[in-house]
Image (tube, rainbow, N blue to C red; front, side, top):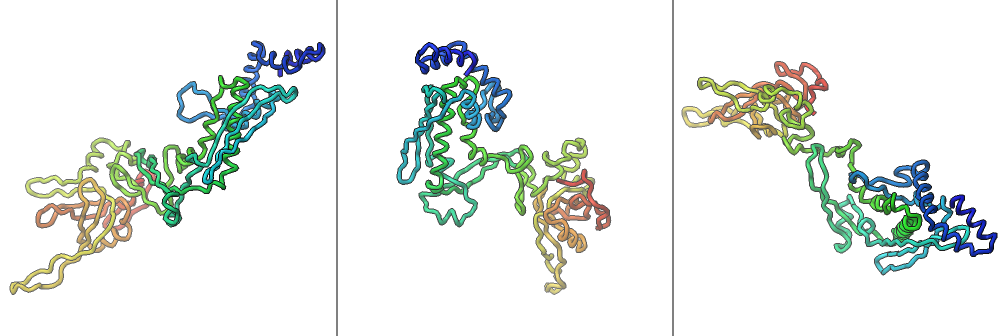
Length: 390
């Protein structure tokens, strides 16, 4: 109450006029309205704290009013010495707790009724009715009418939208009875505060805190903005180059993609060898090794038509590349090195074309594995930060 209002109240008591009438009249006067708005603005600037007493909804257009939170409403009510009188109406059913609360606001000194606000909450609201479960056994053990699947979308490490299925089960309504009662009271109190004090010109209803559960579900899992945290032991596949837990140098998401010059990028991406006067030109190719399969060539056949000696051993490599899903290697030492260090890693290999149809990718030399350079089949150094493929 302003000094002018207190003075009016004192004068009213002196002359014997009804106290309640004078308070209401001064509360509704033009001067009192201006003073009240100024006081709320000063309180917001000097006392109220962002994300504690009020909050701003993310990604909203400029000029959108902040949301008044419960602590902020209590500060405003305390400043004007307004008392809160909640009236609870129980609308619960057998499987749902539902409450409607009417909050009456009165002047704490004169008990004059100033206005009221309404709020309602129930355990049938989505954020209270369902909870996510990470146990498939718990989901299967739950009655079919008390479980469901929820599909959501999230952005992966490369900014691509991916679908995700969440297993949801019904929460026990009794566990949330007090929660929804307090939520109904909070909604009613904020509604009453905005209505009675005229703070609606500066604040919205408390929709921000009401969506706390939903915002928690949609919040990024990783600490970096726009990134999702990779769980231990979980593989992440690139949506562009299909590499696992990394990127091919030709991929647009590779850290060094922007640093490469156009000729270098064209050379790296080109996997098909050129032909000069009928001969195959040996080329280089970047691949990621997914798996290996040991095999042998068909045994040689003698003049009598019978097999002569065993077939030569070799290894087939299942790879991710821009040109081929399969490569072959007939060198034992090279195969031992690729099996030991190449699986799951990005490798730079020198290859040629062989086989009956002259269209088989044959590994001739290891040039690099996981950023470690090779010479004569042996590693010659550790990867530098700039050379690491991820």
